[in-house]
Amino acid sequence: MNFTAALAHGIEQAVGRGASGMTYVAGRKLGLEFAAGARKTDDLEQALDEVRRILHENNCLWGFEPYQRAGQPLVQTDDKGRPCLQLVFRDCMIRQALFCFGHEQKGSLCTMMYGFFSGALEAITGRRSTLAIVHAGENACLKTLTFEN
Image (cartoon, rainbow, N blue to C red; front, side):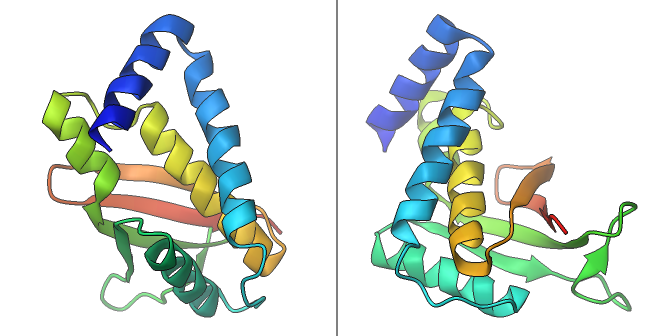
């Protein structure tokens, strides 16, 4: 993983802004492939459980859990009427690798994992999704998962 962090940093310097687009597409393709044989479901919580299983089976340390504020439903709708929920990522192999080299979060490696997550969920639910950073911290990241209608 440390090699991957160094490689990603080099790609960002060599390619510039295009690195994020390239890594997102690569991650999405990988997510679609890893989840090709996954159990299909429309239920968002079951879909997240299936992504968790796929990550574990492929030795990916990327632990996450739904984040629900007191008094609010787990699944909400955004201003465009799309279902969304917040996820906390506590154990993250990407964050740990980046910190080993002193690289910033939110770069191409993070984008690759968003692509992976979106691709896996698309294979499981048949719906496209986005994963956006709300907060990136040293101990955890908070992200909003939004499904397209």
